[in-house]
Length: 275
Image (cartoon, rainbow, N blue to C red):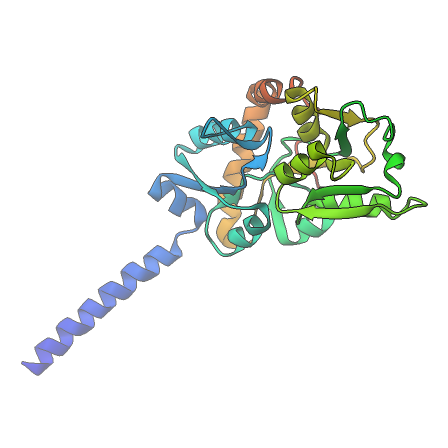
């Protein structure tokens, strides 16, 4: 009796171990396909990539990930959180890939694998409309400027003002919307962000904001970061292939025109970023 019980318990344990091992043997792509869902983490204060429009999550990222999901045969599930929590959330396994997007930099490429670029990310300044004290980027010397916390754009802004004869005071904000609000209120004279973002903001509120030309940042591109490990290789391969197909058949250009008013010339991949 005890022997039969022991054998049944042993068989049950072996079955449970096999099922568990089988689950862990699946890589990220297999898990996404089995679930039928691609989980994407992003913030919602980065228009026109991600923002809330009349209570609905909208933007270039939403449209583009819908197309990516179609190519993978799955649906998108958005995980929304502040930008400073997005990359840590990716590493903690809260979602499969980032929909930020993020500026592709050498430092980030050491830690993450990036998708093909979705837009240019060169940094420029946004000022209040009609502010004659800021006609070119160098005019922020000795003044107060701001940018979004934990962003590559903020780091470029800090580096830029360090080159000026009268260093500017750089304020860090939880998100770009808070920075834009302080700019509109006159608490700061400019916000540093990517040219696509601030051009969109200025287009939406031309009586309030104006882009300072020319951009001051290094030529850069936006891409979506994912994990750089064997488990996620097939998933990132599949997303890369889907995005190159979407770019090649013109869907990416159509989405860019919808949100930026123009198409961006971007490389298929960025292997050696300038930043």
